[in-house]
Image 1 (cartoon, rainbow, N blue to C red):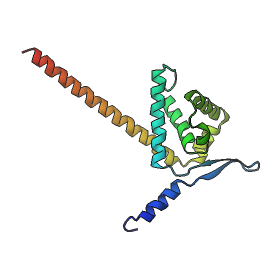
Image 2: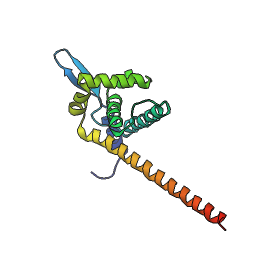
Image 3: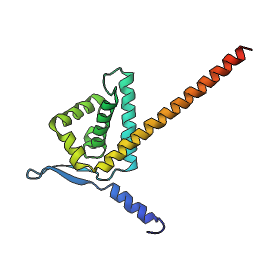
Image 4: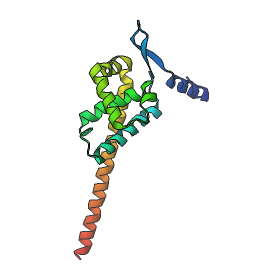
Length: 162
């Protein structure tokens, strides 16, 4: 392949921005546009929205996104949102609308159709792996901060004890 050239980068960007049609009912021309390849930018946007939404639910004491299962389901909804033409309709809508749409997609079976048949599983797994990496990093940072605080407290106690 040789040295990476800007033309190669441009070609890769064009591939990431290509949408395809996924037919739900070809006879009636019912389809949705989706991105077969997930760009890093869109993955980051979906994860950022997930973490903002989790914080929103916690701050407003909502009984949603409280456990790993609920968070995973909501992230899968955000994958559907960010990597299909539904994004244009769902952008700037409040959480309660998003949650209602997520439940409607689940109830109609579209949720599973999109995740199981439309998207490449490797692309979906990349997003899930990225979320796990971010969570692990956050946990590691939290542990390190707790350790630093504990060490500071021990120094204070040791100093006061003299």
